[in-house]
Amino acid sequence: MPRPRKWRRVCELPATALFGPLNRPGPAPETITMTVDEYETLRLVDHQGLTQEQCAQHMNIARSTVQGIYTDARTKVAQALVEGKILSIQGGDYQLCDGLSERCGQGSCGRHRRGRGRGPGREGIQ
Image (tube, rainbow, N blue to C red):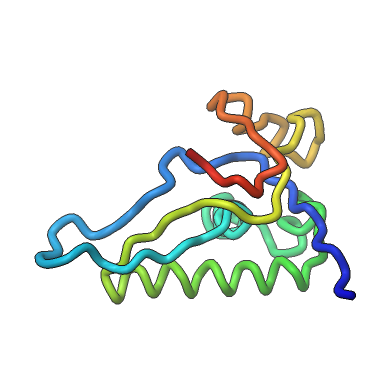
């Protein structure tokens, strides 16, 4: 029996959960799904400039887990950009933080700023 997955702490949901090509002629392109925890990893490492170790502390998971999630997320973004596919952000094994932790978004929680808190996050973003 496999070990149950650990919930990943997410402090900020994406403001927009669907991205794609605007000028592609023809039928609708294929959709790639990125999980909310993959988005959070990109946000913390690439947007906020944290190390993978700091990201792991924020998300309450191991650094090696962050590395795997980060690699998967970057692959999906690259595939969407290069192949002109739609990128959808939804689902995953995450739990929104309570906004009280020092590790949560530099003392403030995106969940409370946006008012879109929901979790545990298996149901995705609407």
